[in-house]
Amino acid sequence: MLFVEFRFFWFFIAVFAVYWTLRDNRSRKMWLLFVSYIFYAAWNWKFVFLLIASSLLDYFVGTMLARTSDPPGRRAWLILSLTANLGTIAFFKYCNFFIESAATLLAWLGLPASLHTLHIIIPVGVSFYTFHSMSYTIDVYRGRMRPVRSVLDVCAFIGFFPQMVAGPIVRAVLFLPQLETARRFENVDVRGALVLFLGGFVKKACIADAVAPFSDKYFAAPEHFTAGSAWVGVLFYAIQIYCDFSGYTDMAIACARLLGYELTINFNFPYFARDIADFWHRWHISLSTWLRDYLYIPLGGNRGPSWLIYRNIMITMLLGGLWHGGAWTFVIWGGLHGIALVIHREWTRLGRPLPLPISWLLTIYWVCVAWIFFRAGTLERALVATKSFVFFRDAGPEQLGTSMLLLVVLVLGTVHWMNFRGLFRDWWRRVPAPAFAAGYGCAAAIVLLFIPPHYAPFIYFQF
Image (cartoon, rainbow, N blue to C red; front, side, top):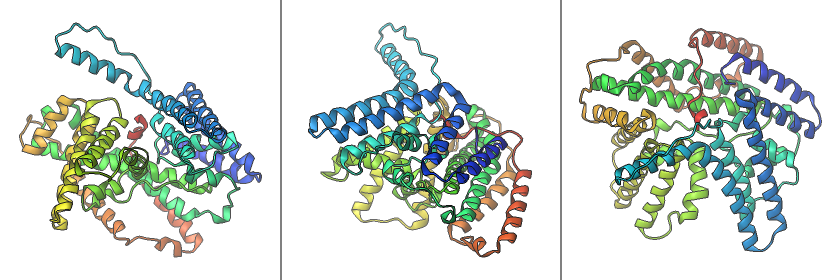
């Protein structure tokens, strides 16, 4: 079930109406848990049991951590949680990747290999809800939060439908306290949530889905296109993935807000970042901070000599790339960002800052080069596209005809920049309620005229 489908609107209206009709907080949480499992089952009901098992296991581990005082015993319970959660991700997402990599290595060594991949269906959002779940056990183990007595609260946190399948990655320490008391409707920022949802809808349905056919056509066979088409295809994919993913999280945050809950902000105008470090402070913030707190800092973080810090950066970014899927292209994508972060850190240490326009251009250029490997699907296609994009070499005679669409993208980019500068901020809050309702209805009707006839799945559903 997609946020941009009409059936989701009817689903959410029912959820919203029943939720605010219920007065008891426990009844509300039970209702949210029930509809969250219905939401997930709309994709594949069999994997609901995997979600429930993950929730129950980590609730049990949290309870045992509270009852265990000796450090070896506490580490054992934490290891159980990490092994189960990471093992789930490893099986569904990386089993075939390991098999294929092993077969390739054996063939390269000249050894006979007859390894067969498995037909594995990846549960939608498995990387997201397992990270939600692990944040609970890790923070309980570290003493940053007390274990929750109610199994309902833990299941409702992990299974909360707005953020369950594609983020943002919400920490238990930030969300579970919100479940302790009943939300009050008078505290809900209804206008802000509605505006945020419509903005996310426009990003996904009107922009991402509109440019997707062009980037898809290019990356399906980059060897057939000119260097100019490579730039169009790559830049359109940069637009597509930002509008697709940030559009989803905007709608997720808005839905949660309409129910009285606050989720973690996930994007903050990343394409206006002044350097690569600033980009990662703005892009997929919930993942970058999760990797920082639960991987980079435990590895040693910024402590120690430079080579050790750079090692920690590379390990974090390589694993961050692998988190997205079992393919070497994702590993290379993470490695490219790791290299850029190391170079930026060393350049900053030397005290030679670049002028802001040059720093911004280099950042966007490098981000786009990395997007090639993220999107290409195979290493062969990625190398062809990179050669065309970086060295301006035509790989084929075909050209993407997109002059009108480029003009539209330029206009949208200008509007996005104006929003970044705060020119549209909160003026709609000062409008009388009837005028706001009428204007919102007209805006929604206009938006519906420009959406494509078919909805594409959100890109990050596969992660």
